[in-house]
Image 1 (cartoon, helix red, strand yellow):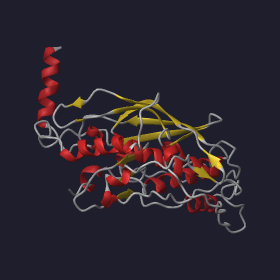
Image 2: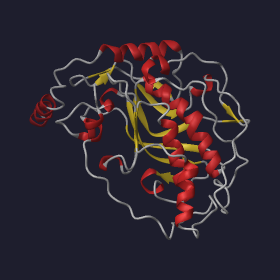
Image 3: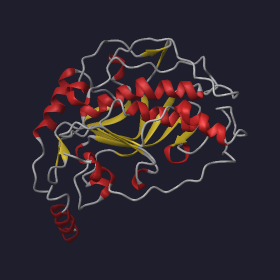
Length: 329
């Protein structure tokens, strides 16, 4: 065990351009404290503060949270109620989605400005549970529970309430009950490469999402749904587009070879304040229309499961050091 531990320490010491010896940026702890003090995220049965994570190296968080549900804190944010905008007609085809009377998703009054982060993710509560077209949404289970810092938990709460749930109701007529995450806090370099820049995962400032489970048990995976049924593609594109308004980095299938099966979200700070949203966000309606035009015999009922006979051929993205190449600070 001593021998194995020594190897691990030596490996960490040489990775991430020396991040084992580096010091964590002071703003990270300051952002955590400000977020917790603001009340944007509060401890509960589903959000529990755990012991500080100190290293190795710069890895860790001063006030990490073990999160078993998103949306728990979202009830303290107020959003404007709007009449749902019905989907546009697609030629002679039925409107997408098939339930235009369902709530659409309004623009959040708390859209963050990346230049103002972390202040943008530590807003005070309004005391009202979000409401969209008269519907309110309960917290969404996160499995497995994720270890995250407060600022990104606040952003995730807003994203789930303002984008994910309304999109699910719009495309499937029901809400999301569970989100599957495959990477939260993890002391590593970007893309798991020990010889590149340190990842935002190393600070609990990033989350990788692989699947959404609806209240009826239907599961939409990012890997299959991204090129799946029209309503699955529409839902995932709307979810990604909404994420690009909440996070500073969003990487989905098609961005690079590393993100073929999940959507990566983080709140990385860049000196240029540049946002990363790849592939470029496209509305779910437009994507569903393209699929339907390519294959007019594709199932048009969002409650019908199966595969598209004319499913497009998947092209494996070129292998690139996505987060590394995209980093500009």
